[in-house]
Image (cartoon, helix red, strand yellow):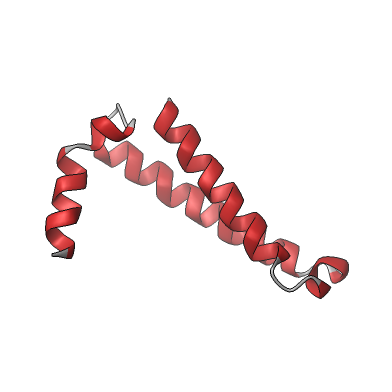
Length: 74
């Protein structure tokens, strides 16, 4: 079932806003994911943010979501 969903997503990638095709969209999404991971780890190293337990992952998820939304709109 997972593969059916994946192939359906690839076939209709243009409907999701990835107008340049699935490969550039996938590369952009992976780049955003890596950027969000680096951001989360970097924020986790800051002492006053470390005390707020879920602040760094929340910022990383928000950055990833904003980036994917930006990719989908372009």
